[in-house]
Length: 194
Image (cartoon, rainbow, N blue to C red; front, side, top):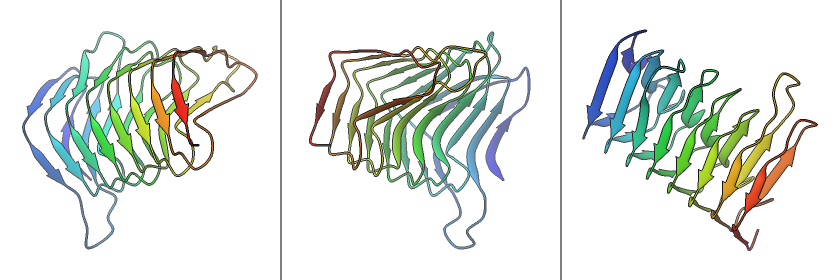
């Protein structure tokens, strides 16, 4: 059950709001669910969502900006984006204590993921078969990987740009790349103590 749902062809702008999920009944709650609509989510806080803080299903013509938010203690994902040929902007967010992945971009999403701070999550950023651009993110203390790039879908190439990120103190690898269709461009990252 989401706090806010934006239906197809709608437009929402959400600024300076606080969202709190269920901490007593272990319900499958979500913060914001945006279905094929324009969405701007800025300077909000999200905590304790079992089904994710921000869940987006985007069309290519939709404008989605997720910036300067604080996301804590989510189970499924902090931010999840799907929608072929979509180009969401995920910038300047602080994401902590997510059990699964902090940010997930699905098949053919070409996200711009920049200057986010991600700490103590399962996987910090998960790129699934797409060409997202990851610049200047700070990732630390992930329970698994800092960045996970998957290229296992034969319909597309997974070719993200992974530049100038700082990845440290992750339990396993700083960056893991797998799948026969995976060709990331990895440059200028600082990867230490993993």
